[in-house]
Image 1 (cartoon, rainbow, N blue to C red):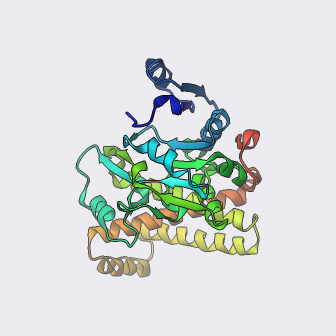
Image 2: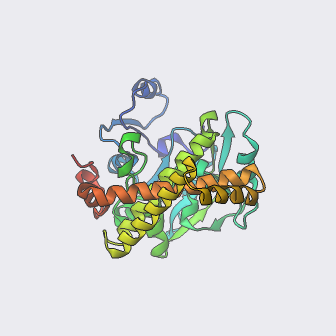
Image 3: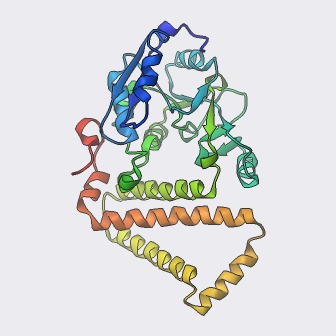
Length: 324
């Protein structure tokens, strides 16, 4: 329950091609939540769902939340209060983990490691920047708890592609990170406000190396998307980068199959460098990010339709529809 009067906000559920009982679940809350609205969106992609919510929202403040969060009772009350400051355009709070089972030691080490800003583990979208209200880097407002002025989203040109089905992963972009970057580059104010905090459910499936490596891989795809847009397409600089990363992939292949004695020696040397299993894990995470980057760069060079998609001015409306 929220401390704010439920008649003062609306709950919009965007069903983005779910195959479960989402509609029935929403219907079961009919009459219990005063301003509950349901919309089905057949076009895949988180950006499409976010834009659908923006279009249907009656208010000027958009509060984006994932379906696996549990909000603090003061969540919406805090959001309403903080946006009374006209200079604030983006708000976030703590995203505290709600682990399904006891996390492995390597996850706890990542989560509890000391940072000047606080505790941050982006691969699980969790963070805790303390109990003080503060102006923050917009990138510290994660998508599972992302409150923003509607006018800013429209001014930025909407969100970029994100969270697409696995078979369409090459069409992935940088999601809400683009909007956060727009806010930072234009000198707008993002605020961290502890009253606007949530718990973020972390399933046992997400507490695996497989999940972390996959998250790193798709982050590499997002990195390639951003670089291609920054380069305004494919140029000689991009070609050189492609060749460089392609060579890295070949090296990884050689490492995997042990086809070269020199590389085998390098493997032995590398093992000496790693003082712990944790070092090996963090190395593999970075490696998977580079491989994801290379995959996307190769796809952009190979497919003109993908390049056109990456370079679209925005992804609002029909522009957010995937190429045929």
